[in-house]
Image (cartoon, rainbow, N blue to C red; front, side):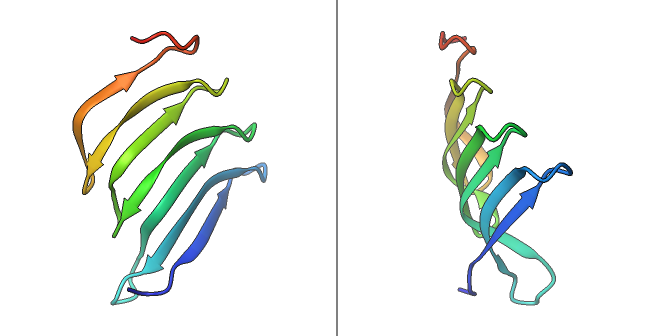
Length: 95
């Protein structure tokens, strides 16, 4: 596998929006996400996290409300949602 690089993508205001690891495809035409991915709200709170494998979501993914409460959790298998996903309201109650 190629060398992993860390990408940090900011909002226009400068706050961190995305942070993830990636590598350059063999032909050098595009970056492929690989490893931990995190997205943040402009206020800095975690919005979502999960993992990529060779450019595809894979494994457990979680989304969070702005107050930090878990909003959704489920699995990906090579970029496709799999199994049952669970969802919660901002107060923590299930949908």
